[in-house]
Every structure is written in structure tokens, then in C-alpha cells.
Length: 252
Image (tube, rainbow, N blue to C red; front, side, top):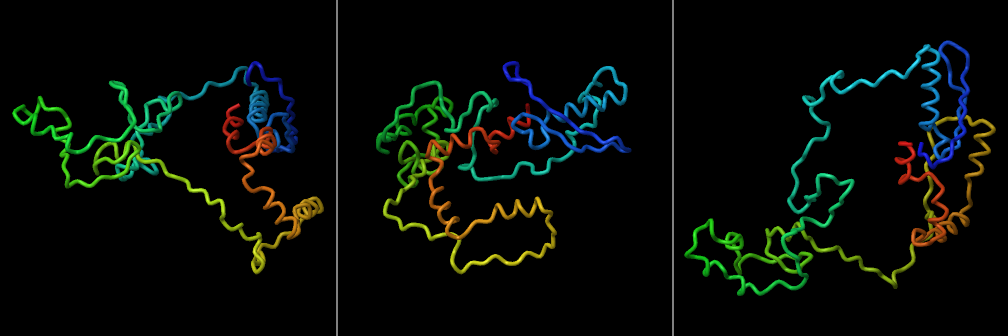
């Protein structure tokens, strides 16, 4: 828990039986409706008190457990095309590089590439040795190699710029596109469920509260189109436990 965060109120109800059963647990944190880490810590404290342990036992170090380096990984590294490779830094948490490789030796300028006739440097550096020639002489630039698109313009196929600086995908917005059909479709019917389950009264009332009419479902579908661009949608989701904040809550 952070120092600036208010103290949470939590309670755990245990049944005096063999083995001990967990009856109920509550917590005022955002993950309190489910089993949060605060309740887990309280259960561990109760377990240590039952065992008459004065201090928390230390965790096993990496040298006390079984070695894992010799075991093969589940997925492993699979081969893939070069243009799908993303070059990142060694510390992606502090510095995120998602735009390819950048050189710090010079300031790159955006613009069209020069004509191929200007890049005929092999004839100029022909009397030099291979070690003294610049790198551009070994790239095999010629008129017979086709050009491909990149973020900087047309480059030769196989050039590092073709896969390190790929062109951005253009999203075309259709302003006169026909409206989507009303959902659910008129002739679509759900198949009957094969699961036989008898609901309790509380579960039956909960299932009835989820029922909506066809007109209400269509009005909800029309009202929630492009909802992520509205400020009201973000204000409603901010206090909720969404998938983007679930990892933060689990590590409290």
C-alpha cells in the first residue's frame, strides 16, 4: 500500500472446522469485490498466528530451488520475416522505441531521396580498397533493383530502410458509408442451451434483470457507437476496474 493511500477496511470470516473454511471476505479497495491481495495477506497472517510463528518465514532464494535454465521454453523463438522484426532497447520499461533504429551520429532530414544517377559512387571509389570504400559502395545500388515504399519515400528492395522505417498505414474514412444493419438480425435465433441448471431466486432475479427487448437493444447499439471518442465514456470508466488497470490492482 502506498503511503499517501488511505487505509482499507477488510474483514475475513472463517468457519471453525477441520479443515478451516473461508465463508466471506470484503475489502474497500477497487478489487475488493473479488479476492484482493489485502485479503490474501490477512489470511496469511491468520495462518502464521495459528502455527504460532513469531516472524514471517523467509522466501526461498533462487539457489535453493530447482534450476530452470535447462528446461526448454513452451513457445521458444520462431523464425519470421525481417520486415516484421521490431528493434527495441534493452530496457523497454524506461525507454520505448517503436519507430525502428535511429542513428545519433547525424540529424536525419525528411524529404525525397536523390536520383539514382547521383548515387553512382562505385566508379569514383573504384581505385580504393574494400576496407577504405564507404558502405554505400557495397549496397549494390543499380537501376535493375525495384523500389519499394518506406516512411522516407521510395527505397531499394532489401534496403534496411524498407523494414526499419516501413510506411504508415493510411486509414480511409468513408463519410457516405451506409449505416450498419440493426442488431440483432431479424432472422437470427440462438440455439437452445443443452445445459440444465436450476437457478435460485436470487439468480433468477439477476437473470431477469439482464433481459432486454429488441427495441432497447437496438437503441443501446446506436447510442454506443464511437463511444471511445466521448468524454462521458471515459468519466464512467475511470472509477471502474477495467482490463488496463487490473494488473495495477493485482500488484497493490
